[in-house]
Length: 84
Image (cartoon, rainbow, N blue to C red):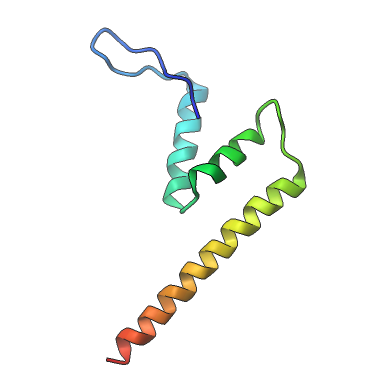
C-alpha cells in the first residue's frame, strides 16, 4: 500500500506525516475487521483514481454485511453455550 520508506543509519523506518496517517488508517481499519482489499479500495478514494460514491457505498455495505454475519454467529454461539 505504501512504497518502502527510507531508513536511518540504525535501520529505523522514517515516514512522512501523510504516510504515518495512512499507516494509522490501515491499523484502525484492520482493528475494525476490514480486509486488506477493502482498505486498498478505501485508500484509492483519496488517490488519483478517485472512486465513485457507488463504490464507496458498495464497500461500506459489504463490510456492514460481514459485521452483521459475525454478530449473528456470536449470538448463535452464545445461545449454544447457555443451552449446555
